[in-house]
Amino acid sequence: MIAVIETDIPAIQQAIYFFANALPGHRWPFIYAKAAIVSVVIWIMALLLAAAVHFIIEKPAVRCLRWLFAAYDGARGRPAPNTVAP
Amino acid sequence: MGAIRLFLALAVLQSHIAVHFLMPANLYSNSFLTFGVNGGYAVACFFVVSGFLISFVLEEKYDRPGGTGAFYRARAQRIYPLWWCLYLIVPFITDNGLWNFVASRHFYDLLTGFFLYGSDWLLSFKAYPEHYTTPMPHGLELGWTLATEMSFYLIAPFVLRSRILALAVFAGSVMVRVLLNILFPGDTSNDLWVTWCYYFFPSVVLFFILGHLSRQLYKKMPLSARGAWFGLGFAALLCLIQDSHYGFENGYFYAAILIFALCLPAIFEAKKTTKPATSSATSLIRFIYRTG
Image 1 (cartoon, rainbow over the protein chains, first blue to last red):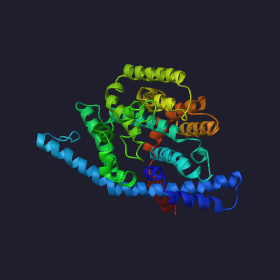
Image 2: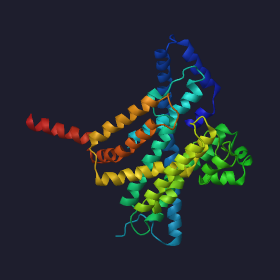
Image 3: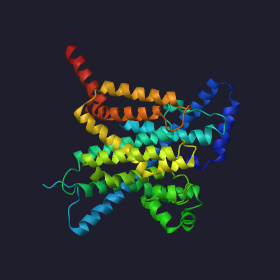
Image 4: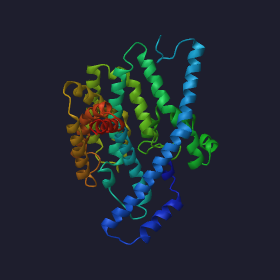
């Protein structure tokens, strides 16, 4: 999500600017409330993105690396480091 | 512990939201949503948590012959899969594609960026006093924290297993940090301070060792879970007090992170031994069933 934020997508920035100025209230409690709404919405999006990345990217990638390590161990003819001997 | 790490991750995210979204829309907010914990503090707290957890797993899981090799392998399995995927995907979003990214980098940029080791040193000193973010794709510059973590993992099995060495590294890092703060006073708005007191591994390794030392202290003087939660609240209060009044380096921050480190083992133990909510609910249902 930070990578997305760092790209400074103009459409998102304009939408937030529009939201900030369209809603009434320019004193500090309203500014804080609007900042809180924007932040919490992005937090929720970030959590959903993190969950998606975990299941779609991270889990298969971890499985792939474990398979590579297991293949390496197999080629060297030794048990994996965390294998408990019977 | 998961909740604490989630909170810290949100604090880092919030600091980026504030700079890229809130301030351009005149919605500037200080860190009130994250109890005064800004991105920099969250990174330091992450290092403390990491030091604590690595100290725990080294003693509980890898304290056997061949344990060090197994530890390195486990760390690689934890860090690299997601990092490599992001490293290959993010250039398509922020750098006009992977080939464009690869073609515009030196070999040492790609090597240190891909394997993380050394990218924090390049960041600090390759274009000194500017910051050299080239090894990472745009948007993944935060990867320097992973590079610092990897450097810590490299020394952890040797440093944390020796009480004298751990104390020596801690004392050395504190001295380096004090000295660098005298030479480069300032806060996160000062590039030289950021280079020497934020990115420079010898001056931040003290946070990792703090996590380890707090665990050693807890074994001798356990803290109650209630006291730990109270302490955590007090640390958040200290961060709230200093928020937007001071720079990164101030007494409030150091008091807060010290309290945070001291409370961490008790919270970890409390969460480890607390029964899941479902079992309490099951006990309640059984109790009602029997008495009914």
